[in-house]
Length: 123
Image 1 (cartoon, rainbow, N blue to C red):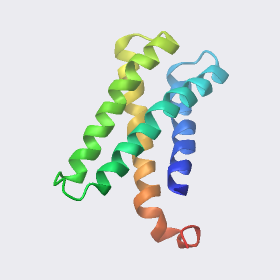
Image 2 (image 1 turned 45 degrees about the vertical axis):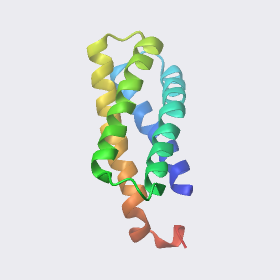
Image 3 (image 1 turned 60 degrees about the vertical axis):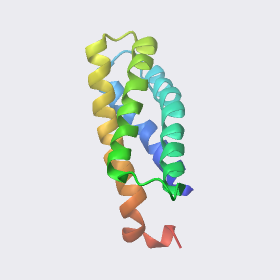
Image 4 (image 1 turned 90 degrees about the vertical axis):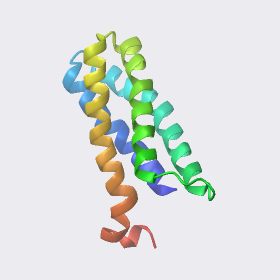
């Protein structure tokens, strides 16, 4: 459970950084946008991922499922970015894709690799 909280907080910070690079207006608003958008998409993505892990009878490749979840997250975030930041469609697409690639890589590290590098956190 600690991984979910850590990944959410780091996702908010990382995506705030991406928003701030592309949207250089108001950094406080960018942080609020990141908190709001990821406050919706991150828990839902984690919920679908953990639910799929518990479905014993469902024989679906986990890697493909993870890609599908990430694509859905990007598709949900694009209109939210447009609505909140008033960006054009192409820029919202770029922001969402870059932000999610970065946070996916970090999330992957934390969830799958960190217990091996930092076992004292996972006792």
